[in-house]
Image 1 (tube, rainbow, N blue to C red):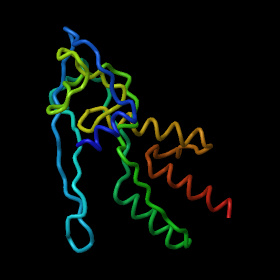
Image 2 (tube, helix red, strand yellow; image 1 turned 60 degrees about the vertical axis):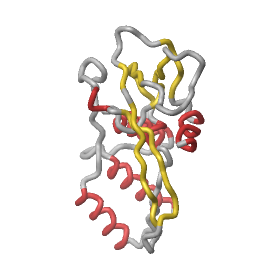
Image 3 (cartoon, rainbow, N blue to C red; image 1 turned 90 degrees about the horizontal axis):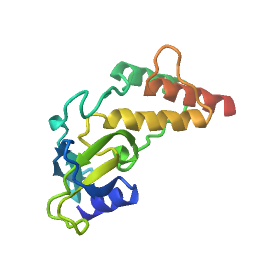
Length: 178
């Protein structure tokens, strides 16, 4: 739990503010998971602070939630193409993914239970970045990833503007650079 709060602090995910009177204050919960190795033995215990996003009201607390996702058949096609062309494929895992998505909306959460944050008990956390469980978290993460790829010179596919299209562009770029 301390490690998760350290990541939240490192990413400047929230700021403590006086409790607003006219805003919905969302609760959070801790989700615990055991990481297993190949033999099924527990190698690490993980804790994740998650918003109870189901308490949010559309058009009041958030507007858009959509985030493009890759369909399974598109991933299969991508892997078959990479195998056929003998392209090495690497998997990317972004630690604390949603903590990197910048929020446009005002979202407030109660302080995590069991931890002392700030001096004033009436303060709440105003989110600057998304947490798991927020309805808009996938959209804001994808938006940040998309902007970063475009800054690097990549372009979206014209027929299917999802992540798999961006991966195709990366692969073709790699082929051209070989």
